[in-house]
Length: 260
Image 1 (tube, rainbow, N blue to C red):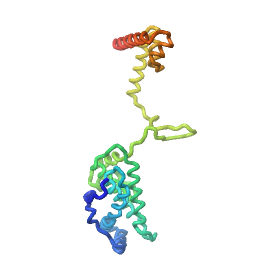
Image 2: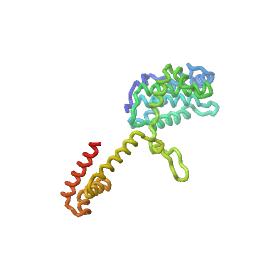
Image 3: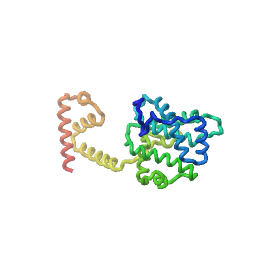
Image 4: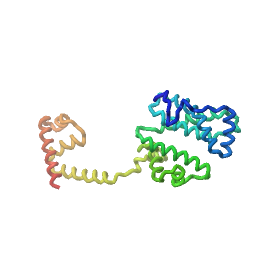
């Protein structure tokens, strides 16, 4: 990850503003009154904090632009939840929030890569959802989120689905008395199950058309997993004979199945 990149997500980091303490206090008073421009100014005035934090993750393979965006989400959450009555510096409260957001992202991120534009849409949707939830005091609908970020509902759903972490088929969904039910237990592949069932019946029928010695060799080789040498020792013939009889048996089975 480039540690000294000047422009991140279109922001010239060399020209980031630095707010004085009295400016921060005045802006926060306006934020509490619902002043959106004050909030934007407060965010910009704390981007240096985000920048300093993402340097801690310089060993990460993640793109610095992505980490900066995630850090900004943590910053905005910190602003929205900061309680000035606690007599705590904003940076003291914000740093663990930003770090937590980045660590959560790194934990949840995986080898499935999602395009930058889709991730950006997802980030906007997540933030819009948080804002709308606070404003309306309820869970916003997809249509409301889409309207807030000027996207279609389909784009919002697709983007949010794209950033979800894959779930393991061995993820437990229920457990009682030591018996655990996993996700894979609830998944059925009807088509392949039917195909395998039909193939199994066909193979058994083909086996029945072999003589006893050929049938024994096929069972030992392909059902019991024995080598030709082991089969030869078990039925008291040479390995060359086993090889010849096995080829003949397989050809007979193939011919039988081909006639069906």
